[in-house]
Image 1 (cartoon, rainbow, N blue to C red):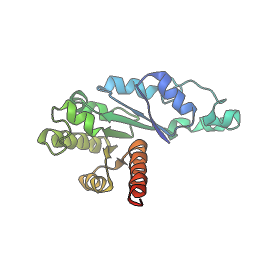
Image 2: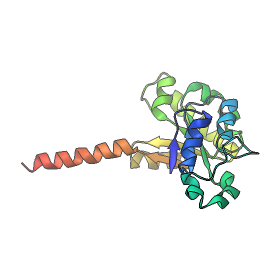
Image 3: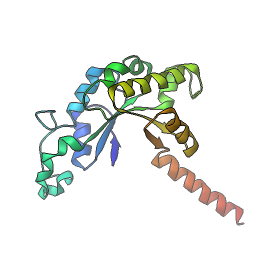
Image 4: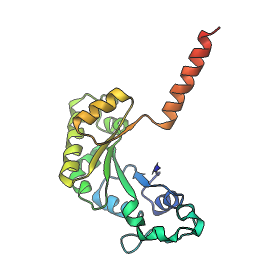
Length: 187
């Protein structure tokens, strides 16, 4: 399970990791310094400042303390690129050790670039290209959120390697709407 936390604060990453998350997605980080600090919260000392405890869910409430031996190697760290400042700093951000994915939030990024929702605009497309290039140079995956399977395939063809399709809320909403529509037609 990957969890998007609200911020790069230590308490946010620590709580979801203690609950057993396999990775943390950090939103709205705009500089290499912010990313470095957030990633410190995902690793135990000496690599980071995550609190060391084995009485939580991630360690079977004390039954699996041996997981500490490999915990620093098993956490996926995803940094969201959601605004122009992050795109401007993307080469430096991508070079921070410990990042697995730079993940573009299309709506946030398009709005911040001044082209709200226009995912075909030259400014937006240039930002995507710049993020992918930084990821390729750093040897990490580029990621993006797609609203549907067709768009996901296009992003994969463009070189994105980590693609989210929809969200739990939108998928549930679509399924619910399909049920209501089907019931409405049966009258």
